[in-house]
Image (tube, rainbow, N blue to C red; front, top):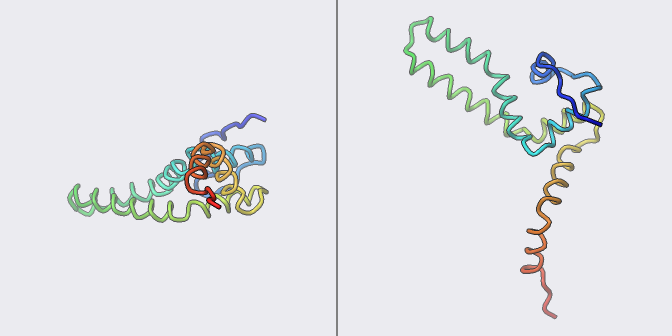
Amino acid sequence: MAVTRPNPFLWVYYQYGGRLPTRDRQWVLHDGTCRTWLLRMVVRGLVMVAPVAAVLFLGFLWLGHSVPLAAGSIVLGVLVSLRYSLSYSVESVDRRLSRYGYPREHGSAVRAQAYDAAHVDEAERYRAVYRTTDE
């Protein structure tokens, strides 16, 4: 089954915690388990904080603060928001996937399985060096 992206309006709705139609269930799984899932979490965090940051920036300017002060304040706020977003990214993705009917911690399991499959040769080298038994 091909994974189709939701339209831009649904995508923004999804970024703010909305539920996509069931036809996009596979895309939600892809979104939380693909190679770039963590980058997608950064984008999600930025999309969520962008309107607030824009309003605050304009508010700073309207109140007569300098541009560097306004920009610095907004940048620090965005960094704190991204830190919070990334701190709970694994739990957030697993919870989002469970809302679409996947088992608990399914996203973490899929990512771990993909990592193990991609790093089989490294695991074999590790076992060959460190897991030998000298009896």
